[in-house]
Length: 336
Image (cartoon, rainbow, N blue to C red; front, side, top):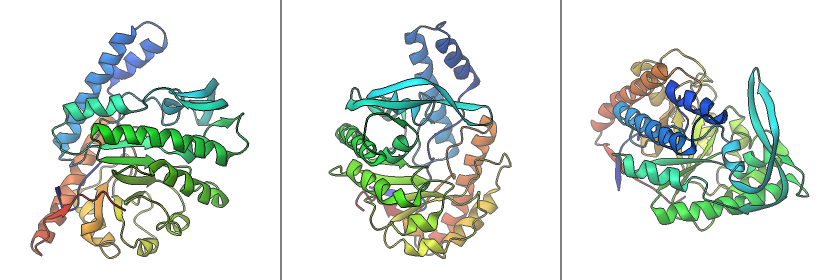
């Protein structure tokens, strides 16, 4: 399977349509039937998927229209978790932080139905399936049952491995593990690495690892230990500075973040192209994918859309330059 050189993708989340947010509110108040809510989510999923495809994104997703929050969504589906109520994250942002109160159990598929729907409704051959990783779920949950965070993370890795196997059987080709918390505690990074490796063991799909707004020099020390073929990292927010750690990428791909998701200013195609030329001093273009820094859900939808449009336009500028060197496509790699 071939892709155009510098394949473009998204990281995961995208702004929900305003009408869908109203459906969420009505559903939470018990004023919208379950069937109607699920239909609304599916309609929004297709709308956002088409939006991603119109921008020219090569490997889309549906913007996580059916997910309220990146850990709450998963812990609500895993047996053994209990919710006590919302906790404050920052400002006026809250989420329902779960507590592991008994042995965790794989109770139902986590994202399998979500993937099936996207697969049925996309015009693209490949989609990326983002799933929160075992260490981050453990870090962002209360632990009232297991002897340690390590034990909790490894139990979560078993559950995710089961889901990954189902996704593989269903035809998934690209799974992204989101681990924004894995570098929070430097002494626990080996635990996160082992949990991720246990989660992907025996599954023959392309795995990417997304880590944002962190100390990448710490992550780079573990590049070759992690059984993933791609690292999706943010660079726009840090102004494309301090990229020397990329020299430790021996053979893996880089998902290069060129869009700042915390700034409403829309990057120009020329800015995107300059950033790509800069990173090619560290990683050859055959090992580069291009994506935003992180999920886009906190932005206005019109701004998020235009950012993706300009990201693709910037990629096209560099593709034309690479074509003059005979570099037009790359194989879709699954192996590490």
